[in-house]
Image (cartoon, rainbow, N blue to C red; front, top):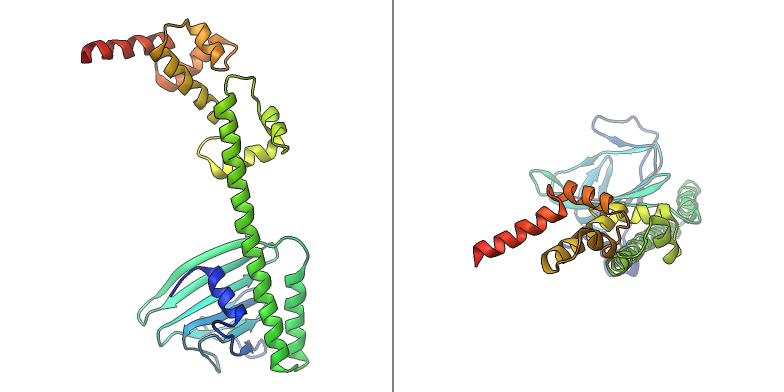
Length: 277
């Protein structure tokens, strides 16, 4: 069985896996030991197998809606796999669990921010009201399917945003790799890509191992090493060509990163070449 959350939800929505029955947890009865209670509403979906939860027997593709403050208490007896969706105020939490008959395993976890219109909140409210007014099960089923569709929209939006961010990050790095000799700064690079300096820093913090300034210095120093190895240029000229207008700063930074001055680095490199020959 696949453990990717998006395809599982899509199957339930499209009818490939045909959502069966929607049940509601009972908040009125006493809370037993080992019950799971949170302050936010949840959906518990049986993907495979069968689970006893209180007085309910949930079969494959059944859903249990647990309102905020309510509880459920699954009795893991036979092998079963479930998908839990927690509707927090700021984000959705997705979790796939599998009971193989001896132990409970966490197979997948995802979190995604709740952005934009409060569609999910309205659907949760509609689901609760439909249950309280004892609406037809088909109405409840359609509301639940709409709620699952909203979840996939948020997941897909998160994936697209992450993909766009990664593409932007790669473009920024390519820009630095090409224009390293120019007077680059966080502000000038951000302006070139029509983003804020803070967002540029966020891109490097999220997507890269180095911060913006660290990466810029890394590229410049690597270019300087290549020039020191291959050309008989003065250190001041190497610094200038690699984007360091202050040769003293260049020498300090070079020594900090290599434990050698630029001249020592060059001499050691040529000494090793002579020894090898």
